[in-house]
Length: 267
Ligand code: ATP
Image (tube, rainbow, N blue to C red; front, side, top):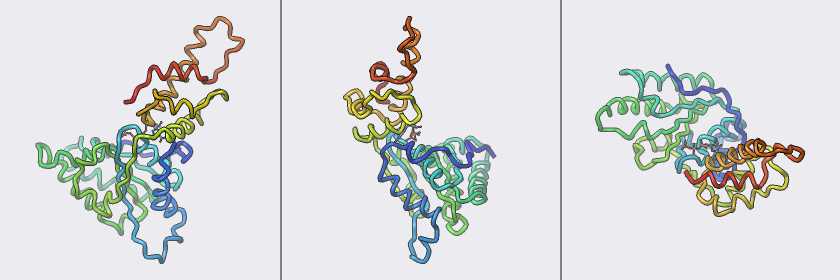
């Protein structure tokens, strides 16, 4: 069995996620509090969804928020990239899916994150589609075993929800659809502030003003992360050009962001 990534509990906190407040609230209700305080949910007869599909443009935090949910819930995290399940010999894909759910049950509470989940369904009916067909059927069997699935949540991510096989989107499977949009100007501010937690930013820098500049329009979270890195690189590059290092500080200033903004554009 080859898994893409089995990591115990991811090290991504809510503070690392900028914006996406509504999503965070939904995941708090549906996963985090349910794992941390199961007694609150008992006896109320609520039938809550265990499967989620995050959809939206690339680089806007789908993977990041899934990891943060696992961290905040104290849940194990199995990260599987959809296409990797397909690169197998006959029968191995189904076995891989069965083992994955079996591992997840063993280490429950657990979140299985299916990145590029659309890859498991798009070529239905095409050449080689039978591999997907069998894999998909196995996945549906595992997803439908609600009793056996206790403590195992699934989160799928896709940039192309329209090509997903409808069968996967039924309640109990990836039943709750959540849109992860391109950030608004205010959300860009929150993302830059979240990213700044791990960087030395000079106190004089106004991140809100930078995030709201025209040059930042349509930048995704991943683009903003690239911007932050370019700005940090500009600090290093600057040192090379200085003959007198008396006033040199290893902090990111406004001029470094200006250099970075010329290099980064919406992906
Ligand atoms: P893809 O569809 O390409 O897989 P994705 O939506 O899963 O993309 P992520 O992998 O979560 O995007 O984001 C890539 C990187 O961009 C993150 O590791 C993080 O550095 C940054 N990022 C994206 N969105 C946010 C956000 N809302 N807050 C903070 N950082 C973000």
